[in-house]
Length: 230
Image (cartoon, rainbow, N blue to C red; front, side, top):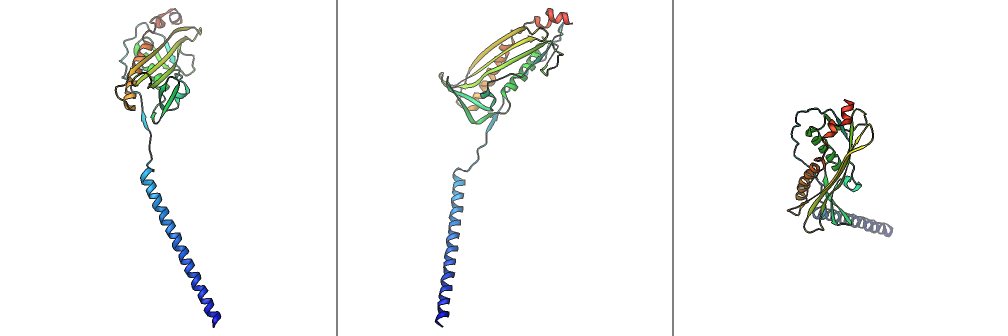
């Protein structure tokens, strides 16, 4: 009889321990879930990047071609590695380069400059045809260029932007350089935020490309080489 009573006491004691252990486990789960909810509400919001693009005015329609036979191909403009990483660049000092973590370009800036140069040279009326360079020898001249700078400047008093571009044109038959130019333009930003910086980059880029291409020699289209070929 005593043996049965002892067994019953042990059984009840074991059941109580299991209930206490289960209660403790449930309490731990409840507190863990509550902590996750608090963390999610305080700092768990996902932040997505903002994307920007340069947007220059469309060039005018080209004038009627007169005695223009020369064709030109444009190589994709090169650029420093840091300008091709996608983030908008700012410089807090001449020696330091910074990147906006959540402010990015929607298009590679060097690709944008290439397309803009093609459009403007097509509209200039100085060439019978302007196209992207594809390696074919069906053109007379090749233009190569480099986007040197496209950045926000924060160290020269106020906020500014700087755009620098260089380019040169080569006679495909002779390998001679028939034209080259390099420009650097600076613009003031009237408001200290990224959309205002991008807007000023648009205006400054437009001025830079116009100055880069404005001294294009008119005799490229009708010069001795073009005349000899045609």
